[in-house]
Image (tube, rainbow, N blue to C red):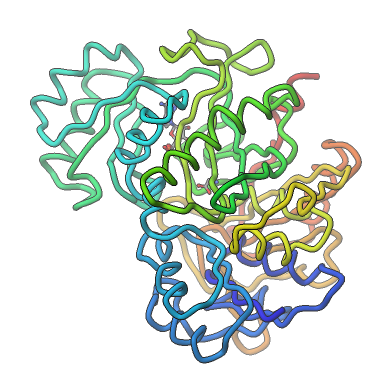
Length: 433
Ligand code: AMP
Ligand code: GLY
């Protein structure tokens, strides 16, 4: 198959790499890709968010499939544009991508479909929002409605913090139009994890569970990041929960969207909070009464979850993606290997704040782990850093411990000035003993 992958991060490198593992060889293109995808695909000088240019390339080159990595082009209507030129695309149309692009819309769909989630209300007026706060207790969660580059969620420990977050968004215009509406949401206790569901418009197949590490430092300390590591499977998702997650969370959303004329195809990523005897730490049960609640939906593969989940998939990945994109996905399209995976992010010193770029990276050649590039570029035959998250290093193993050890063996070989990484990936799984 001729396949175009849109995006330039670790997630897109992992998607491209996994397609390159299929027995049948594909002709792979990335728009724009990175220094990692350059060795397994043809990188095109087209920006991921340039909807017009991607659609024009697809119309001229007629790929069998376009796989869209990041949320921004989905929300901007890239899949709608590809439909117009008759090219199958893996990813939802813009109306479906609102599940990620508008937290208010996602809540409306969840409420209509009876999906368990935190109780929430939406406000455009700061005084009305502040008046509603006491009913939520503390902590309380304040969210900008729209996409705010992962910074639009504030977990407020005090009323003052909550009021300041409301003022920042509704009065100070901190996130522009994305923060012109805010949600006040019930704080959910428990352990977070991710379920990526592959959806073909009518049905869904759940990919293996995973857990992200959002805080920058060991022990889940410091500010939130795009994700400092991941592992799969996540033992907090016991096998008995999977049917409930499919039937009470994923499928009701797919059906509710279909009822509104929106055919959802691609990944529906459910960020879940689990609060039961198998989760850590415990806390009061959510108002919904459910032990599994939705924290957020995303309209795409997670990053870095993808770098841990995709290496665990067997079978022909291109066929699975094409089947989902064309409405004929079958459960047997997804084959999960009996292996665990752990991914460690190597970041630039200072991330998620300001950091330097252009540092030479060594230790990539003959690395014992799978090394996916997140923020790199090539210059004069050298690989240089070009982002905050620089590399995703994935180890595989029969056990999670083995996978983690293999990931860190890969990390230890890599160096660049001011590089840092978390040393406790998968700690929640190990704390169970
Ligand atoms: P989101 O962008 O909605 O995923 O929020 C970012 C992070 O904020 C989540 O990954 C959670 O760690 C935290 N968060 C968001 N909503 C809640 C909630 N209702 N209760 C507890 N934590 C939350
Ligand atoms: N790892 C979180 C995300 O992709 O949104």
